[in-house]
Image 1 (spheres, rainbow, N blue to C red):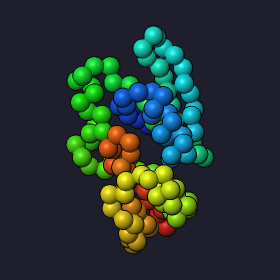
Image 2 (image 1 turned 30 degrees about the horizontal axis):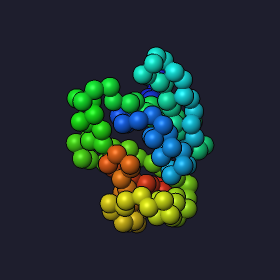
Image 3 (image 1 turned 135 degrees about the vertical axis):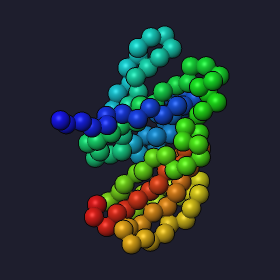
Length: 131
C-alpha cells in the first residue's frame, strides 16, 4: 500500500489576496489557478523546489467558514516550512514585515522560528540538521 498527502486546504478570505501574499511574500510558486464555477477556483501554491504536499487556497463560502480563517488549528502551529537556508528565509520574513511570534532558537535537531501568516495561521520555519 502506498499513500501520500497531496493538498492541505487553507481557508482564505479572497483568492487573489492569498495568491499575492503566498507568492510575493513567502516566495511560493503558483502551481494552478483554475476556475471551477462563478465563485469557486482550484488554487494550489507550494514552496519553491517542493515536490510534496501543496496548499489548496480555499476561499470561505459563508460566514461559518469565514469564522475559521486563521484559526483552523485552534491557535497551534499549523504548518511547517522546512528550508535549506534558514537565514535567507528568516530575513525574507523580516524584509516583508511578517510577524515573528517566536524568535529563532537553535535546537538539538536544527533551527526554528514561528511566524504568523496574513490570516493569523502559525507556521514553523525549520532548518533541520538533516535537511
